[in-house]
Image (cartoon, rainbow, N blue to C red; front, top):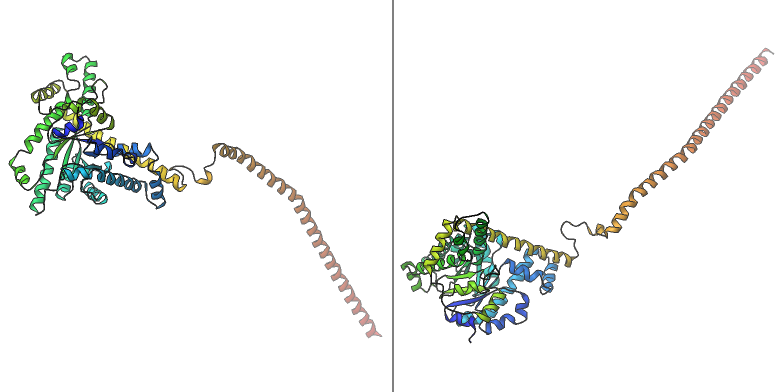
Length: 463
């Protein structure tokens, strides 16, 4: 039997690898996956990089070199990530060339902390595009309210964009409009649109994770129509994605896109993300099988990719049973589970999760950077004080005793000095008395001698 991953491609779906690490590159494993036809693209995110850097020593040599060059933790991570993405893009370059720029892309994400800052996201997308400097790069921008305008501007700038963290159908409409708006602006300014590529990453399994949890809560609370609620478990994610595909087909069948297509514009393909099953009760390739169709991408983590290669059964299913998908959405709404609330929470949680991973990643890099430079970790005492706790405690116990002994010694010395000082004062007083007595006696003798001389003179005159 032919490789199921290659058969996916024959049906119009591109299997991408949702993973990256230095070892994947240096071992030749990624190159082999591409050569075997297993994958035609690659995606990354802060969580993937956190796992790659924190769990291996593969980055240590470059990390230490960058630390000694005076780079900050964020600058070090940026350099490591850019190097990996550039190398991955080179590995996938043959796919990019063979498909004339339609496939073979590698994605790198803007920092999650910029998710709600449109101007900063635009600047960061431009910087990453320039730093990696590969035609088969895609810069990932989250589909937040602030991210969507950044998508339009980045497309107008001529960048390839992977719009990530899409959960709701409403937001997906905004993302497609942003892509088309960027192409129109570019065309109106006299620039080409035939070299622009974009995917819209629509997240799947996370929808079921949250909806199933809400269903369980209602069942536990004694909700009515329990059989119906139970039957809806594991249905929301696929239904949501099927309706997204319907919206995609409708949007890119319009006359507005036909004009752009005449100038070489490509469709913005839906990319099914988060297609690994989170619930062990569901089959390993449950979401992959359900969402196969033309002009789509499925980015799979290592275990899901290996599982599908082993026992996948490719067949176009994305455009089937659409009425059932709509019915699932209606039934969820009747049960009080509003998809608008579900998808809003998922977007917020998704941005927060990537931000947390990014912060954790930077903390790991910062720790290794400080170890390289021999600097204490943030919040640690200075090196002179960073001795074993036992010695520090011992010094702490000794300090009061030493201080007490010093004070006692000073008191004894002061007490010993007091008698000596008193004797000295008395001796000085006695000397003063003696000097005064001698002075007084001398003066008296002098007066007596003077009186005697005067008396002798008087006697001499009488004679």
